[in-house]
Length: 107
Image (cartoon, rainbow, N blue to C red; front, side, top):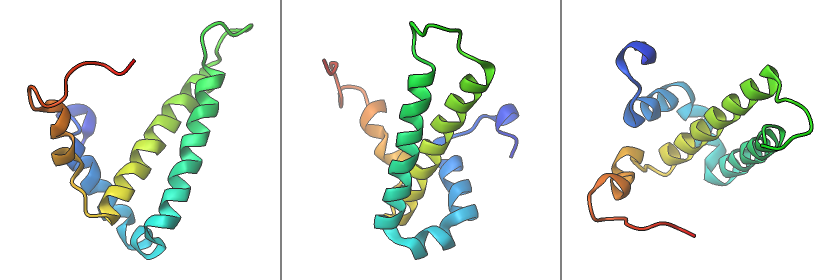
C-alpha cells in the first residue's frame, strides 16, 4: 500500500509493524521491547531539544529530518508494544474519537 496515495490508518500501520517485526518482538517480550521504546523516547527528547524555539542558531535540515524520524520511531515502537500485548490501537484510540468520552484539557 502506498500511504501517500491512499492514506495510512492506525490499523494498517499496526498491521505493517506486526507483519515485519512480530516474530522478533514477541520473542523479546514486552519488558525488553519497552526498554527499546524508552530508548526511542529519549532520542525523541534529544531531537526536540535540538529543534527547540529560541536556539541561538537556526535549526538545520538534518536536525529537522532527525526529529521527524524520531517521531516515527516512537510510534513504531508503540505499535510494537501494542502488538505484543494484543492491543488494537485504533480501538483504544476511540477514547479520543468518541464524542463526549474525553473532554477538557490537561493543564
